[in-house]
Image (tube, rainbow, N blue to C red; front, side, top):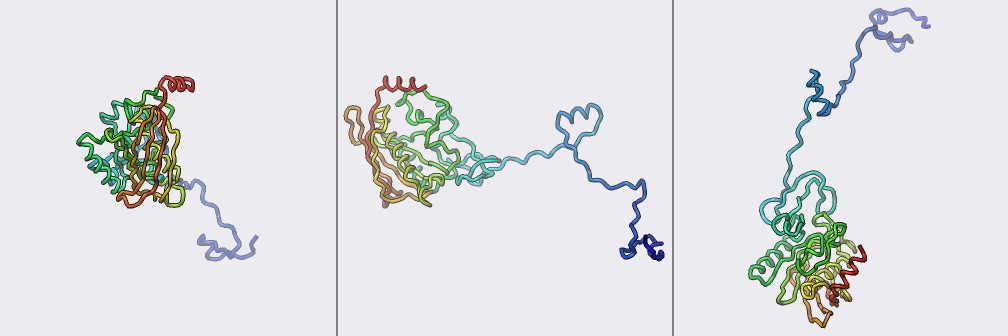
Length: 307
């Protein structure tokens, strides 16, 4: 107990720290300020409260309107972009997501939702210029753009008669993010037995830093030559593929993959292919291939045994 006499500060209600006395408690019945409690009321509870005459929480603000991608406007590359949760062309999370395209006449006839061989926001200007140049060549009927879906049976309709399965997907179209994987479009010239592919490798195809993996180069060459062989002989499979890598392909660049059928001997289809730059000054790879035409009856039996 303190032996100090009460001072004027004590009388006035001020208790200095040097006095050693305890601070008196607050008066009984003094309300303490409390934090406001925010109660969330769901729509069903809100309706019940309104019926009973209760007070419901205010309505939540409406969601913001859908935004459009800056590059999604007029033209072939103009696809509607909504948010949230899409992936950008480099594979990272982004608030922009391009809606599936190609749901028009061609896509609806084949029962597909998206034609991957149409321009999108990830295509470079060189890719668009080359695409428009080949698209102009289709007006005379010699060249034809090959639609590209996520199933091999839809690439060249009428040439393949396998039963389509719902649990499979084309390897080249296994990446949904635009610009991250294989960005390509093929054009077919039936009279010349030739298929040309415009290819732009994405960031997910990296091998050596900054360059496309050699396996991705072999994949696009095999697919281009295979499409050419299918247009000539129908059901075929790769028997031999020989590739000479000359110059690496930078990621994001555009290359031209030109394949043609050299000769057909019975069930054997011999083809050749070149991968070069858009200006034709740089040769990236050369390839030769042998495809074997499959027996339709035997192929159907093998497919039935696998199911």
